[in-house]
Length: 388
Image (cartoon, rainbow, N blue to C red; front, side):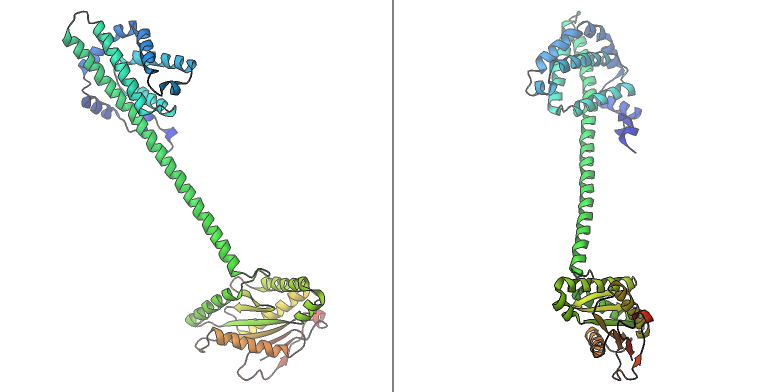
């Protein structure tokens, strides 16, 4: 619930019972109320002089003139003090009275009156009021004067604590707001750091030119996938491919052209991979793909799509792909290095053929080689083989 939904007494949890309790603490009795009502006519007749004497003395206190600021503000303050003095001797000092005192404290806190100056003003006003009461003690009775002064002191202390309740509540609210601001700043800072850390981690894990994962990250994913597949008894396939004629293209057309070829290859890789697949630039013109839950036969289909997509992106490119596939089977005893070596061997076998070529690693040295044709519109581009 917002503070604006509550009154001041509700915010400070001041109830009718709490008011009674406080009156007992400050000995503010029915007799005191009667005493204050009896001196009301005296105060009203002296009201202008009391206000004048009060501010004449108060502005001499160091720092007060700076808080008041100007003559118009002083004039308004004098009018407010007159209203305060009238209510001070009217009773019955109930919830409505308490709310006005709480508002006084809130106003003084908001305009920047420090507690020490408020206490100084309280002492000055108390001294002036007691003096007026003594001057009007027609019976020259010390007991009556003392009783009235005591009643006045009890009420002003009752008021003072109410005012300081709002000061304290204001400070608590400021602390809470500062805490909330700090927590918000901390959350925003954490989000910024997390976002920036993620960006940096992403940058550190990606190849700057192609946007595919770099070799270091590829090894991390390969190790993770190998462990996962072993644990779940799943098969996956590693695809390793190299670009034929890439050096010739670089030498003929320049490095910018070569960079564009690499970018086109990466674009084709990104288009054909599933969310769970991993595409990486292994180095130079060598690329790798990790295909979870895919057999070698299924990986061949993926590689055909890769060649088709790349050929559409760059139909006139003289660069072709030599692709090697190595299937990981659980309990085969393979580690990451041996799996990469198998895919690398299969890739080098493909490089002995012309055009786009796919070779699946086999312990039987790739026997029973079988030719698989590209679609008609790509036959003129390259020959496409698959050996197993």
